[in-house]
Length: 193
Image (cartoon, rainbow, N blue to C red; front, side, top):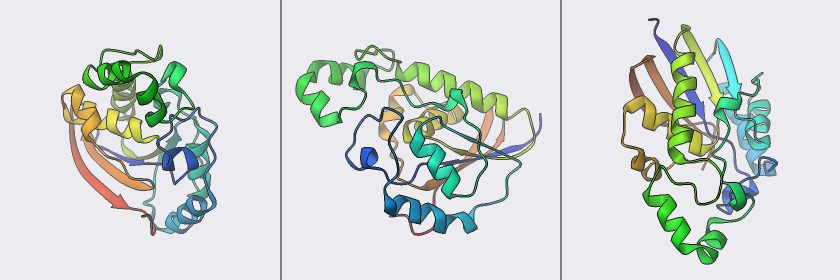
């Protein structure tokens, strides 16, 4: 099996990220986010392939970084069902027991959407498929997708998903091959905060 390198880049700042809001996929970047992504473009490593989560903020970040990154449905953000578009604070105030259950059990989806386990499985399958070809892939993906990929790549228990923080416009590098990945974390891009 060939060695691969996958660079995961989280999107630049957007109002939804700033407000800890469950994005509905249509959230644009703010002006500062676009500027930072453009300034980070020169520091990106070369890549053989690129991909992006289908959300607007990931596609716009990829564009600002100068990447031709087709949408990868397998890299879509966690579907949070009826919570989409609401902030975590709003949902917690309205449904505290549902949020507590969701955070405690990766197999639950009280919002009617996808489970954390489902996201980890979907993203992990993309990673293993990507590893079949040698070379570097740059993927601009939602923070929850970065967390899901790390859970699967490193064989972490699924509750670790909630213990991984992903800052805006940062890179995480995975290198290796299917079934055996090494991790380099938190490489800043440009002057991201």
